[in-house]
Length: 395
Ligand code: NAD
Ligand code: MG
Image 1: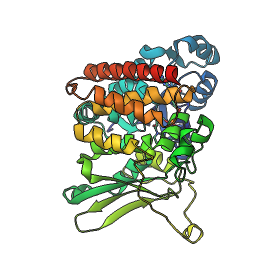
Image 2: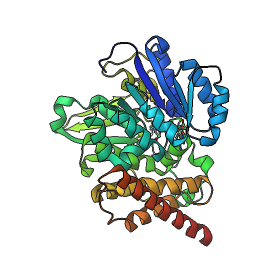
Image 3: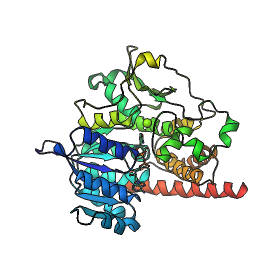
């Protein structure tokens, strides 16, 4: 951002799937020759975090877990790398100067630090879609007002970002988000009723963190992405379409008023999106598997089935209702997802719990501040937890 010297990068959530891919991209684009690593953050996996921080020569390493502070300190002793922990540690991380921040903490935990980094004017490479789902308008406005670029990393949104020509925005008619359909694309409702975490986490094409993998199986991930797209690209709900495309080769498309559809294609490898966000506006050189169309032979498409994947309907409901319904959907879904992972809630009940909480909180006024968002987030979590408990008792 105009300053001389190497670009300073921070990676929030460096120990996760996106975080590790980001460090790999940084290495391929010259590593410490071209970049300076300000902060790396993780949670309980402090051994990996310490190893990453030493390899990257980070200035600060932060564990989100207070109780892992001593362990991280021990693992980094003698390195000269500063150590912090907990929510205050994450805010310290956001306060350290960086030109580019990868926001790859999972869930709502990423919202406050990402927003703080945005307010300091850093470019934000956004993997944490929950920021936009919960607080879209406030978040987008904060980033723009503070002078940073908002660079979508979610593969669908990165694809759209790549083919959305800035001088043709007036002619955008629709965007088409592709969805793999997940492991239950061809499963019956009866089969889906009884699935466990192990089958739900097995994504056919992408290798990702646990929560997003299960969200892909329920298509809650696509639901979040619809709302994410609305905020990122300033679209109306009926301009956002979803098509199931099992090969995950087309990462998403933009349809224009002349009938043209532009698509971005590639191997399902998050490093393409991460690299595009890091090197923007110049495309980097990356060792991603090249598409071999003769081998691919065919690309398939099918309409999504909203009876088996009600999450998509809930996303439309949240978008048309507007206000804080995105925050409600996200918070209730997170509680339901955690209950499913813990074996306390069935797979299909995640959508029921989410919809009930959305209906209960339909009249909550729109959020004027982030505190309003956090308040409604908490309210939705409590209500979802109560519903999970009732169902568990009944089961
Ligand atoms: P992950 O579970 O692999 O990693 C999450 C990271 O967040 C880890 O570094 C972890 O230590 C940290 N973390 C966990 N709980 C935390 C807490 N309470 N406070 C602070 N940090 C915490 O997840 P991921 O798959 O890398 O996904 C990260 C984000 O990127 C998510 O928002 C996800 O939806 C989004 N995303 C991921 C992919 C993908 O391919 N993995 C694709 C698109 C979008
Ligand atoms: Mg995605």
